[in-house]
Image (cartoon, rainbow, N blue to C red; front, side, top):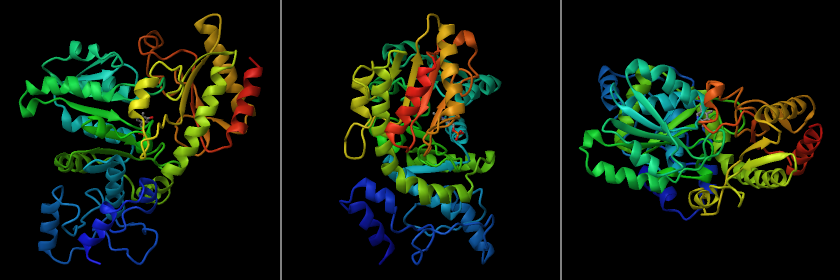
Length: 436
Ligand SMILES: *Cc1c(COP(=O)(O)O)cnc(C)c1O
């Protein structure tokens, strides 16, 4: 079968996304492995060039290749190699975006997209609650480049237009946000930015960047709701088994060359082995894992919500959750079914914030010692259920006096649901709450 006929077979088919992600593209111009069932691992840092001319063409092609039309010329792993390139095609497909560029980690991907969209004297407008290392990147490093970051509560849409300045170049947020699961209305943000962009020249347009790590493309595709770029930590739900780190930026094709150039020069390249694992295990099982994790998360959230020792539970799938309606609108699986994700955030009761924090610590320490189905560890989207204390772990970069303004509770608990039997997890949670 000819190349273009083969790619048509995938794009035109009526098969479900679940099947398409499992099988991947049945043809890729990146590597002819038509006699393998599983893609082989490319473990070559450098590539043989049969002429100086081929080398020259390879460098000319770098960053400019049209994925389907041209056979790639590989030169050196940091510029691109088959496993990463195939993974990128599949990730762009899953997010329903034009192009993807992978990175060594989620932070590598975030630094790259912010690196190409901003320069000295620009401003970023970000939601106040985000992953700790992203806050650290913005607060510890961007002042050196004279890039200012303003944090606002983007769940209140009026805050967006109120805080835009002439220098604003990027709107940056996570939805749901890490760790407290704030939901931000992507379409509403798009509307405000469209109005603002009409007044601006092309070089001055504002871009919307969304970290979609908590949802994975299974639960939400922000590009369809108006995001310009999506970033992911592949280390989490997409990788799925906690074996490899990775990151990706997905967005318009015209930025692919610049992202590749940034990756080449700053060097946060995804390892081929990680790319292969995500391609072989992560993406093909994404739908299966997410379906089960969502179902379990819903059961656990409902259990916690009705527990007398729990102050409140944030889970997008709970009708009582303040952002439920927006979540229902934008967190949809490939078939349009509500997919509220696998993360839960909750706070234990206490007479004071200090007591609530102490109760949370006691609960998590008991789990660390005694629970079989829950593991005290950072990270998420793992096959195992992981529990952690954001204020002292993933978000320890936030000073104690800033926790409240960033909507992180001193005693908040983040639960990342895995693949265990839901009843077993609930038994462990029940026992651990009994000691409080
Ligand atoms: C973990 C995480 C990151 C960073 O990803 P790494 O792969 O650890 O660099 C970024 N954003 C969110 C929301 C995360 O949970």
